[in-house]
Length: 218
Ligand code: SAH
Image 1 (tube, rainbow, N blue to C red):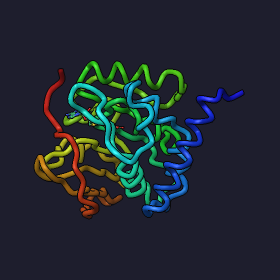
Image 2: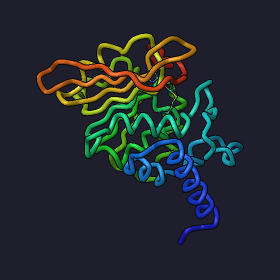
Image 3: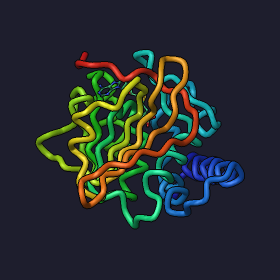
């Protein structure tokens, strides 16, 4: 039985999904994955009423939970033409929202975050959702995650002037990496594909604004 709070959250999520559809998100598997994750669980209590607005929100430590439209766009670009994201690395787990959404689109999700307080909060946020294929790790994602590489999909949730070489190296043949590339004020989504013959192609998508990708952990 659903509580009235859960029913309200589900209705709010449905309205959010309709707005994403109206703004051009077409991939039904991405929309279905987002419908399953109660976004209010991932923001601070005082912000629960704003959780379904299409806006980034603070999650502490000067970081933000990504806007729903940005999460949807990135997953749509990353997934395009494939049935699953496969083995997936997320750099910049933050509060864990996007990792939770990717759970039903990927075979496995490895989400790394450089700020210890955030990765702990992310684990707390995810626990009640019982997503068996999501692992969280406190680490510098600029180095990738060599012990479980290669990845079929890599998604970077923080902006940098260049894509870290380690990440490109940890891409499986046929794999795809999506990252915001640019300076502090604006970036562009760049998709890198590693072909089966080990050559790389690069394509550019939307202009976005992410918090910076920083080296080391804290
Ligand atoms: N994916 C989150 C958005 C997080 S914001 C969501 O679902 O809403 C980006 C995050 O990237 C921040 O929490 C920041 O601390 C983290 N980050 C920045 N540089 C990093 C690095 N080198 N390794 C891991 N995480 C990093």
